[in-house]
Amino acid sequence: MNNTESPNIKPLLSVKNLKKHFVTKKNFFGHPKEYAYSLNGISFDINKGETLGLVGESGCGKTTAGRTIMGIYKPTDGEVYLHGERLDLTKGPEKRIQMIFQDPYACLNPRMTVGEIIGEPLEINHVYEDKKAKQNRIYELLELVGLSKEQANRFPHEFSGGQRQRIGIARALAVNPDIIICDEPISALDVSIQAQVVNLMRRLQKELGLTYLFIAHDLAMVKYISDRVAVMYMGEIMELAEAEALYANPMHPYTKSLLAAIPVPDPDVHQDISIIKGEIGAADVVGCPFALRCSQASDRCFKEKPVIKDVEGHKIACHLL
Ligand code: SF4
Image 1 (cartoon, rainbow, N blue to C red):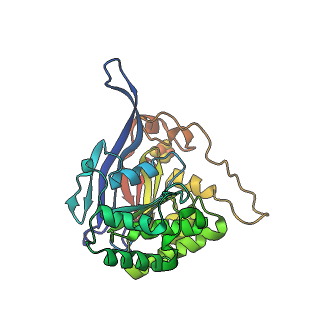
Image 2: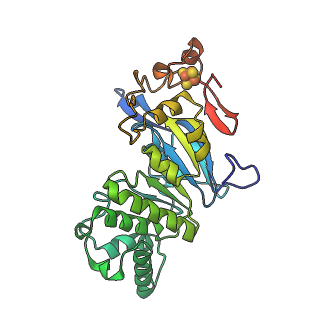
């Protein structure tokens, strides 16, 4: 993909000013009194067949973003469009958007067989009337993710972590979704297994023309799988650009800090991995959310929120640029 934003291509998914605020305290009458601002108005497009990486430190709101787009959380404000059609996220999860969850140990029901787990979305969405057709689809999905149909009657505890994540992928694929939100899909796996699962996801993307929103904190893996990358901080997007451009020429001070903090596998290179210093600050900050930790912050940064601008193909929220 060569476009950061594609005026001529209709995006498959459009997220516009999406907000999700959780109520943390209620008053005497039970009305909301205090909020945690997990998502402060994020906007981006994803094109068909593309992978958009969504990165940031833990607690930055990236998982909330995925769950709100999917309809697991009801948005506080903003819109999500699929093929140009506005989704009604108040109705709950949208079938055309599926998710691969972070923890393959926790997300599979231990009392269900693998066949039942993969078949569950087919059942809920009444995809097949015919039992045999449903069974064949389950076998097909198992083989697609590198498992065998003989394993359909086994239970999750009989599988390794990598195999369980393959089962999670098969379940996400069952109803032929338009987009798959991958919420830290490899972070709970052994390092030796991570590459296998990512390579499987890349192969499936090629073969089936899948579109991914890939949420992660591992910047190296995000670079490997993503066409474009969005960097989040405190519920907002700080920078969004082509993956190559973002890693070769990061422009936002926060992106620069994050990239500088990636460990280099060379004992002779001494790196300051605690490079992002300072307090995180309040959620409902008036100015730039990164101001308290930014070495280049000026008075203006504490008073005025930077708006997203296009700078040399990067979308950036920073007064410096
Ligand atoms: Fe730093 Fe100011 Fe830019 Fe925020 S707006 S990243 S505080 S220079």
